[in-house]
Length: 83
Image (tube, rainbow, N blue to C red):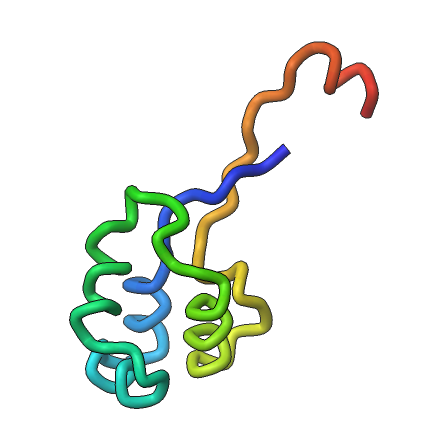
């Protein structure tokens, strides 16, 4: 089983050599809101699904799921036995 981890927006912007201002212009999302997503990475789920998809498309990601880390969580013995 997996859960959503931290937001990867900062590292994706850096890899694409794109600024928060440029992303804001492409998406219509304010620079302040983009900065909020980046700096509140420890809070899971701050980005709604529509926003997630809008940003993923602007960044030309294969999947919106790339914007967040996916963390495998420990399974209970019962779940492990059913695998």
